[in-house]
Length: 212
Length: 375
Image (tube, rainbow over all chains, first blue to last red):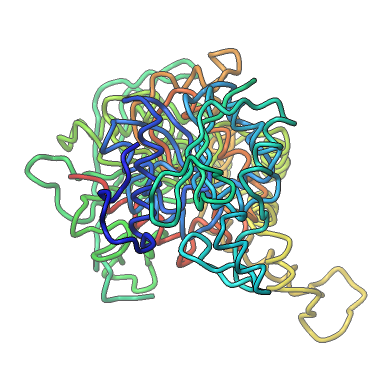
């Protein structure tokens, strides 16, 4: 993956828009042209539209929020309005090449079920999430406050997030569920790739997962 | 009712087909007529036509008003008109009364050319497939090769589905609202009770009541009352009527005590005053028989393999007659075939009847989908 900003560019945290584009680019990088994907918690369908326009990738989004479903329909994105907390019954086994959860797993309760379901309906799962153990977040906690940053842009009282986990936690869960990490990428808040101690230095984590 | 976005005064038109139509249940109609209305203008490319299919008691009168009857607003007027979600500035919209109907299309009230008398009970049982075949004849006559969309709620949604299966190349978008790929046992049971109410009315006379100068009003009335209970949600009934008393006290008689009784009687009476019992009977049978998966051993996904249209499927959370789970069956069958489909499950407390209402989010969904249709 090429960083979103050239080396030597001034180091300011990515804006929300840059972060989204970055997220999309990382995910698109992992999906071959023309594949058929499922995007869970797809919001207004921007990722699917991006995948379709950039790589002719087809598929469906899944959303529960009414406004997001409306947004998808406005964007011409095929969206299925169901609550994935209850699983993906009705979705056939291995009917997608990839099941994606982009920046949404932390806002869902049934983490284990969702991960298992993703790898039932798709050959691979792609998951991206904010790493709560990122240095800046640790510093916030150390100073006595819940972290608020570009990657965790909510106050504790209005956050949609319900699961607070780290890169280390996530990998432990994958191990427990028999899920193989096929590839992992971590980036700091400036969009620079992180290889050294990603659980400390990575703000955003991306995983390509398969069955172990 | 917003009059400024109304299509205004409308007049029904008549399409006559002087060629036989073979029916799915066997036999044929030697010829038939369909009464229909149009709103908006067919564009030069003939690419903007939208067919609106009606449900059990609906008609071709979808939008607008008849000049001589100011209260005759079409049944889906809140959806269809200039600037409305189904925008007649963009689309050429057609409403048609189905075969077997009682609003002017060939049906039990029509004269049977073979006997010179009304068909009555002799009118053949027509199916959703037959309706769509007849609608296709009308489309041919109007020079519409391909519908931009076919849209309907409930039984109307079944027709939209059937279009996508019977004429896959002639429909670009299918919009099925509060619909189902087939009726459940419970659905059929409700229909059977409604039919028995009519069939057991002493005024039914084996369906030839017209010859006896009577109408099986009591049966029709009961049928409609039963139907109405299933169209509303428990919550909505509670909200609308609760245990409110008509006259402020219990009468200890079989007269009207509760508001809900009054409502049902009113709806039953109103309906029995204009709807034809034979049409009601055959329409409920058309509903019961509809099951595109039947010919595929119950495999709905296999049935949908030939569909080419893009779909919008919508259901309502409080609809227990055609519940969201039934709409999801359609969605999953389409997904199996990798067809384009958007599915919205709309929060609306009005049960099955929600599809006729103008809930803001519901209409926003329809508007968004229809705006993206290229014409």
